[in-house]
Figure 1 (cartoon, one colour):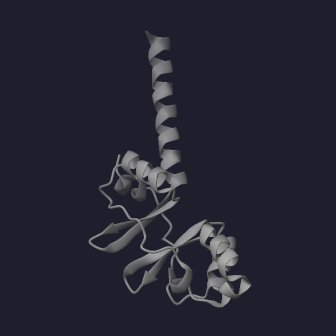
Figure 2 (cartoon, rainbow, N blue to C red; figure 1 turned 120 degrees about the horizontal axis):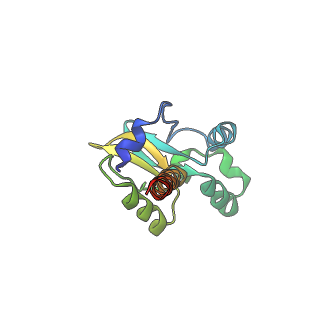
Length: 142
């Protein structure tokens, strides 16, 4: 299964911010949408990612004044990305190795999606449950 197949199931657009978005506004967006991160765009290019972790790290380093900065000054950059052709297990391995939770999905340098560790783990759990059910059915009918 590829990332493209996971993205096919999505109906809502990717929420993102600009490098010029004030941190205070982005923090409000994360809280209101109950999401952990947003891709940060510089025009059509993914410039980085702004996450809950960035809020904590920047508050610790700069204090509350960081809320008055722009995302371009505090985001994690460069973003680690995948393509739609990346396999789910490969993406899950990348997230685990790099200790991150979100991946922009790029095709030809343009963002076509945004996936989280939760998306990948949900897919794996659904697959394992389906395989277990198939085994139970097979055993009951054998």
